[in-house]
Length: 105
Length: 237
Image (cartoon, rainbow over all chains, first blue to last red; front, side):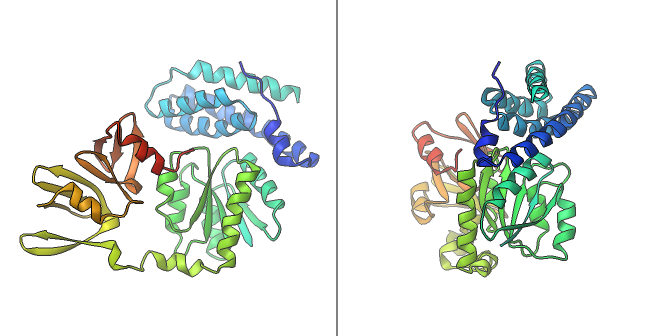
């Protein structure tokens, strides 16, 4: 499994540590809510809304430098629109990976 | 230059806000988590530029643009590269940024906005759609009548023996002619022969899968030899 990193945030902050702190806090605040929403909609088998949730989470996956996970999330988003949930476990692993990483920050 | 940011994600708004803060003379005057709030704001205020997310619940970025009578300059921000072709339909859209937005790419998009602002071509955009030239028209001969067709409205031309089937947004025509003849009359940047029997308007493509193109409701084969040229014309990421 890939390791999340803050390279993108450092690159775009241009050394602005206040911004780095701010964006990390926003991600730490927004990510669990989006994850929760995703789990709720998936459980309810509302796959259109679940796809929307995955779409939103995709951005954070990419911000954290998880290129392969991003590909999986993109495929999962498309699959969900067709009612195919086969990538769910893989996607959940990505979310766990990010959750663990954010807890360390 | 005054701008607003429309994105349902807090993280995205913060990142775009940060990128904007590094640009001289660019002021973020408001941020909105959805298009509805932005529409209400724009009913009372004018802005020079909008950073607009496409994929938002209930009301997409494209839905939002359709509500604007005189849209300002717009830079699309999205996690999807799939909408790039649709974006070409709108004169107000200056650029298309795929998230996560790289600072260098953002600068490039901003440069486009600044150039537009400086050259005062805003009015050009709004009149562009209505300004028509003879180059937009094609006359076809059907039953000894010359019928005018708006070239950009053509989305597909199919060879049918001694005839060609010209499909447009409004009507279809069966014309006694050849693909070669009509191909010579069409602008290269808009039309491409993707198969010995088909010419398509690349702006009307919905999606491309393996060796076929979905255009309106028609699935059209792409021949192996024409595929590289098609891919070259697309704004691929």
